[in-house]
Amino acid sequence: MRAVRRLTLVPFAALLSLGTPAEATHELTHRYVVLGYVRDGTHRPIAGGTVEVVREKTGLSYFTESDAQGFYVVVVHLQDEDLLDTLRVNAGRATIRIQARFNPLNSRSHRGTRVDFT
Image 1: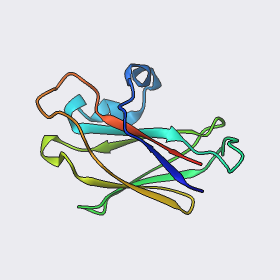
Image 2: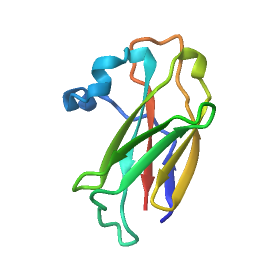
Image 3: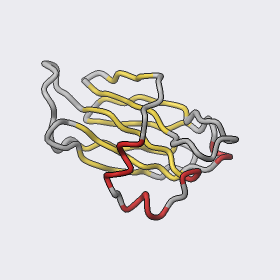
């Protein structure tokens, strides 16, 4: 399985309707959303695949499973001072490291990135 990192930010307006418990406990400026798809070598979705996001600075892990379409969402607790923190995203045996990139002066936009695994 190889990891594919997309450098563009994803519009997160659609995520507001997901109603995850993390949204209720974190202010907009305290969460960073990592989302994407987990697919096999023939690009078929992997349902129930475990995805883990680890904050390398603290070692704290956040887990989820991909849905029937292979889609996953992980909400990580990050604040303004955590800009550029390294996050390790694991799906199966594949791992990719990303930096949390966002504008700490912007408290209105959702923060996050997309990481797809194939």
